Length: 55
Image (cartoon, rainbow, N blue to C red; front, side, top):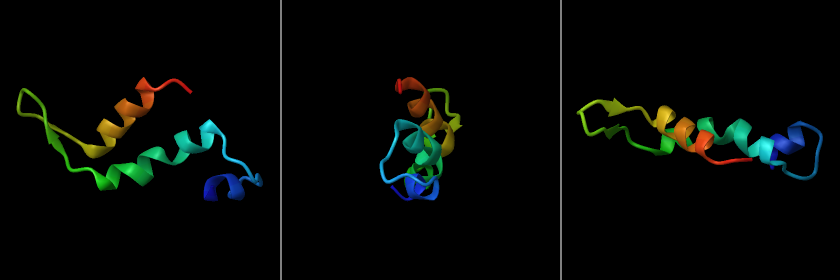
């Protein structure tokens, strides 16, 4: 809602959620180890999730 307010709106659009999803969520996740032992960064995980959900 804060992002929408900064954009001059009193309602939230899906694009608002997309705009703030990575910075808001990435810091709450721990890096994961992939099957091949390569660490998947939290930011990359959130980006993958974001890209997999249609708006």
